[in-house]
Image (cartoon, rainbow, N blue to C red):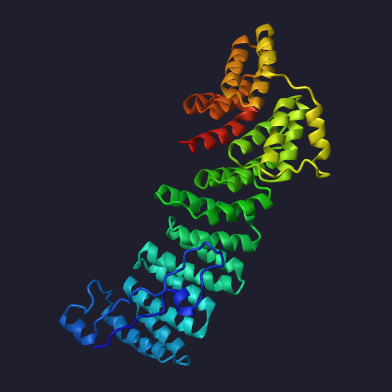
Amino acid sequence: MKLLTRTAIALVAALGAAPVAAQYMTPAPAAPPQMPRVPDQAQTDHGSTPVATGAVRPSAKALKPLLALQKAVDANDAANIPSLVAAAQAAASTKEDRYLLARLQLKAAVAANDKAGMASAVDAIANSGVQSPTEVGQLYMGLGSTYYNTKQFDLAAAAFQKGSAIDPNNADILLNLGEARFAQGHPAEAVAAFQRVIQIKTAAGQKPDEKLFRRALSIAYDAKLPSAIDISRAWVAAYPSPESWHNTIAVYRNGSHQDLEGTLDLLRLMQAAGALTSPADYVMFVESAAEQNNFTEAQAVVDAGIAAKVINPSSPEFRDIVAGVRAKQKASAAELAEATKSATTGVALMRIGERYYGMGEYAKAADLFRQAKAKGGVDNDLANLHLGMALARAGDKAGATAALNGVTGARADIAKLWVAYLQQKA
């Protein structure tokens, strides 16, 4: 009995080609799937059962030319393969015939390093409808990898795209597609593929690799894509750390061109998340607070920077800043309490609340912001944002979330970042 042998179906394995060069990518299969086996002519004539359960059976007419082609392919008889392929094509009448023929053509193309032949054979296997979407997707991933590794990025992307269309939830194909799109010079399409991977893994209850967030964010940020903000927010939600918070806030601030108030609120979030890590962060924070005449908060930031050994008060960079802040008059808690009694407008109450916030008296600050809202005459979104921030720092997670969720308009994205911070608190 003669059998059609296993062929190099998984091109990555057959060619010894690694998956696309993204460091976070999952390797392609190391071994090809089992080649379907077909009984010889005697078995077919007697209706006997194929050796392998679920074997793909050729038609009686195609069996002989397929076996002849198999012999030539196994022997790498390149001179006779074309005529034998033509004979098998003429005899093929079923999808199984066409599938088995394409498998043999694929093996011959791999041996000859004929990429066009590989592509044609993979397309034929896909069109036969015999293999599952997962198996066909792997074939296209292998084909795309061979193109990618020879820098034929357009052809690689086309192969990965076909594989993804057939097996749309295959994250590995999408990762390869993203890298191919980036190599083509299409950053938006690359980022979209990476974002789809994040969605697939998250929906499956899996945590995407942090390197994937970094890769997607790097491409999106360099290309100035609006998606950079969404990716950074997803990154910090999945992997909260001083670094991810610092970069997420920086990406948002740089992309949204914040005013002084927005910049200060983002720096306050950076402080809450423990993400003030550089002298430049502290300089910006101190200057932003000082520009709002909140010298109490500016002094607190200077003191925190010195304690963290990030600010050297005697260095040329900080000497004048530190001296200037220290020289400014700052309201005491008693003076703020008296000012509260005489405040007649919502704006005045907001300013007093800001001073309490800068002193670290977050519960008192929250009370002043509530009073300001009740008094009226203030920006309601700003009041809700600052109320939520104060409650967050005071440890009132539920109250803070409610206030922040009430922020709309231009400050809504800052509120969302504060909500993300709250969700990471116990």
